[in-house]
Image 1 (tube, rainbow, N blue to C red):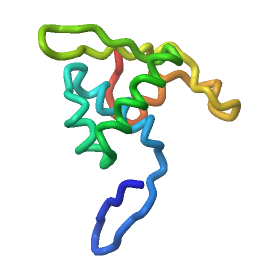
Image 2: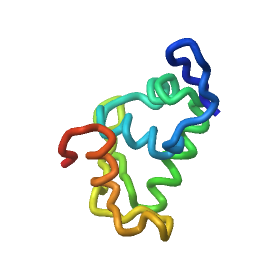
Image 3: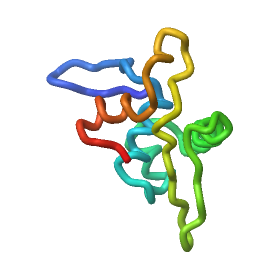
Amino acid sequence: MARTTGQGSEYTWTLLSNYAQVLVCLANDSHIRLRDVSAQVGITERAVQRIVTELEQANILSRERDGRRNRYHIHTDQRLRHPLESHCTVGSLLEAVTRRPVP
């Protein structure tokens, strides 16, 4: 679990899962390297790779080769998976967290 320091105290958990945080990173920069996602989220690069693979398998994102890098496409119309959240889409979650429209 990532540790975040804020105003003199240490937080050992966050409200959003690593999956949501990876999606936020990819929404902010579709060409970002997974190494950089790892640094931003505070998890290993291997964990980020696993999350991206699982999000691909769930049809929440896809990737395409763009030169020497990957470009990530988030399928914003996909519904969130848990029954308590299934009324929301990936796009609505990302818009709430990033405070900007997500294509």
